Amino acid sequence: MLRTRQVAASPVRSASATWTVIANLVADTVAQSSLLPRAEAEQALSAAETVGRMLIAAGHLEGHPITLVAGNVHCEITTVFGTAALTLEENLNPIPGAASATSFTIYLPSPAPLQDQVKAAASTHARLSDAAPPVPQTAAASVGPLIDRAALQRAVTPR
Amino acid sequence: MTSTYTYTYSRTHTATHLTDVILGTISDILADLKVNTDRLRREWVENENAIKAWIEEGSLDAVVLECHQPSGTVAPVIEFPVSYTTAGEGNAEFTASRARLARFRAKVDRVPAGTTYRLFCTFRAPRTEQPGWGPGQRASTDGLRGITFGNLGSAPHASAGMRYHYI
Image 1 (cartoon, rainbow over the protein chains, first blue to last red):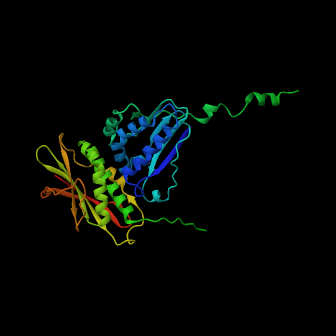
Image 2 (cartoon, rainbow over the protein chains, first blue to last red; image 1 turned 135 degrees about the horizontal axis):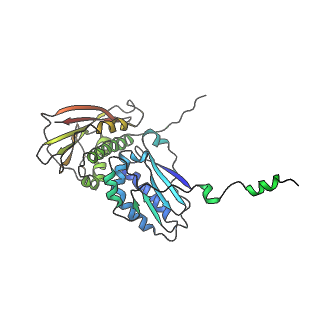
Image 3 (tube, chains in turn red, yellow; image 1 turned 90 degrees about the horizontal axis):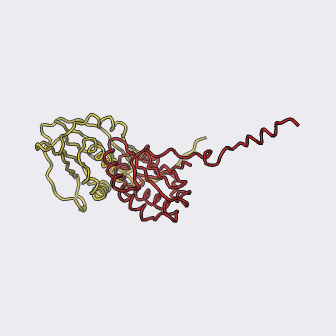
């Protein structure tokens, strides 16, 4: 199920501080799984930190999200910049759905002109990717149809 | 019926905002020019802290990006002048001209492989010392043509512009 989170960037936080908030959100979420060490998420995020700051400062994360895929978590994280950041109500709690996750990937956006920098960062850790994230599983696909067609057919069957 | 939402802002917000606008623009320009950004990324926090502190105290006049080509030519040179307003008299919004900047970047002269960059700050008033920054000598812009981009970003206490010097 697709979830989204927004993090207030400048002028509320510097690019560095904004990255720290995003990194904590991702690491806290991954740490919900008993099978995934928080340290591994922290290492991956540390590897992406320098390019992450550039993406934030130049405003690219406003429209190009970082996507965390971990178990049932498929979350797009974007930043809010400028005056709107001052009134943003943030939800920085761990994203639900990662408790049963056995693996995770952090998909970094690759907007122009930072493609080379993002590719270089993504190549430094196995949990990072500069590829397009997979299409999120829809709620309907995961829980089956909401209408019981067989029951409807029974209801209209002449007695 | 109308409704309003109030928010508070400080000179620190202004400094944070303009620092992001300037450093974000520099990183995009260097990436566009294919100039190696390893040092910029490595020294990001020092630069961020210094520029923010100098805007907050009102001492910063401009940030200057020089591109040093292997031939010895220094071009383009891009200046980011900061203008200050009396508290509360400036634009109460925090803005950045990013779409216009993206169009402008496409027109910036390409540079040969091996070009490096240097960052300078100039001052309008006494400044506090900041780690990682020391005295330096800017290259002359004599003989270069110049274009003023205009306002790059604005905030309640100050705004940042951009001037582009090229061959």
